[in-house]
Length: 255
Image 1 (cartoon, rainbow, N blue to C red):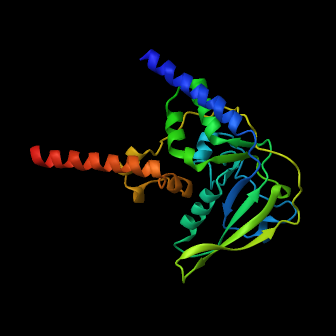
Image 2 (tube, one colour):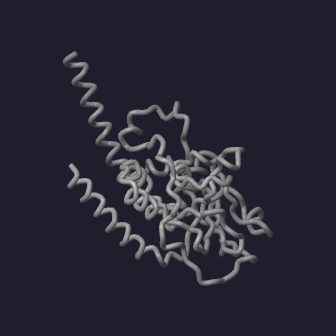
């Protein structure tokens, strides 16, 4: 057992090193938002965090978002290095109301931290497998968390997406440049976020998701919803559902 744990730690350290090298040159990230550029491309605009809570694990799971208490609110603003992921989030959040959404193109700086790299680092430092569960659930989002927010001078442009009833889908209708943008050569931080968070709270994995009633869940967010729509998550979810069906059949057949 100790050998297996040591092997797992060595694998994480290897991946951590590889990820660190691969992510040093991330010079563009994206953020989906419902707010138009008229509210973002202004002096003292940009994207501001909910508060000062630097617990990255709570931010990832959205436990520190939407609070009225600054000390409890997340000190991070979420972005992703995958533009398609941002667009998918926008479609998912807006499709029920068919409202337009905005995908902001952002120049990251040293306060942008890779969530994947950070979770790998947390596990390597603590050996707590709950960080691996978080990594498995959220890694496909490719999130870069901006500590203390994003200045308006870092936002290059915004792409506007609107629903087309004729096609029954969303499409980009325009792009708007930010007049306050400052062109500087910067990249996201190549190191993980250093502050170790508290141990993760309840983690929604494929197994727990298929067994819980989401309509009665106290915590349901766009980030969580996005994590449940990845191919890997759906595959594992299908396996879990199949197992539960077999268990139910056996129970009704033999008890």
